[in-house]
Length: 211
Ligand SMILES: N[C@@H](CCC(=O)N[C@@H](CS)C(=O)NCC(=O)O)C(=O)O
Image 1 (tube, rainbow, N blue to C red):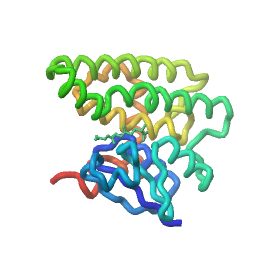
Image 2 (tube, helix red, strand yellow):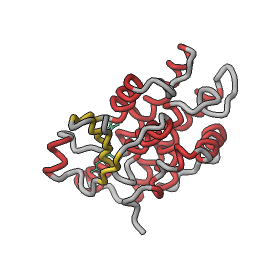
Image 3 (tube, rainbow, N blue to C red):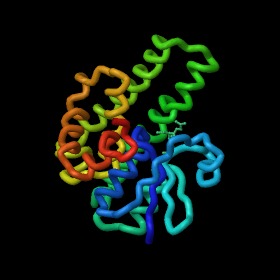
Image 4 (cartoon, rainbow, N blue to C red):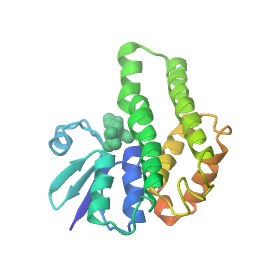
């Protein structure tokens, strides 16, 4: 099966998928997208959002749908813990990022806020930091309530939760968010970055990262 990932170095939803592909040891071709709003990209992803996974000429949109596809096709190693309750916690943690936080802070929302609504840089920064703070506070609390502390979010092996967290930490740093109040998130982020699967998925490791 030939896998091609249409993404961009600074595409945090794509970074999640890159991490999962790497954790599963899957080879894939990196297809750099310079302009998701182009008509050619719209033919493979009608939402014009990245990433898109191309599998033998068929296209799958939405990072979480891609991850579920990969998990079903390549179940080992899994990106979910073995325990059912921990699997649910992993999904809850991941969706807090992918369904609640990321959609309101992503590029197209920021472009609309500044270009159409007229928010200046100071208001944009307030918007961004507000939603990071709300989300990260709840994620930190979710981790603090785990029945057992662990190296990664939900166990001593990385899972989808870690693959969602690390790109979001990159985003928060890019927008100068204060992160010292989230020691558990910071600790897990540090552990993840020691792993090759995460390092190879980072924006600066991608072929289209600017010199
Ligand atoms: N829910 C989607 C979100 C995808 C998304 O918002 N991608 C952003 C980049 S992280 C994008 O393609 N933005 C288009 C643009 O910047 O023009 C997913 O998980 O795949």
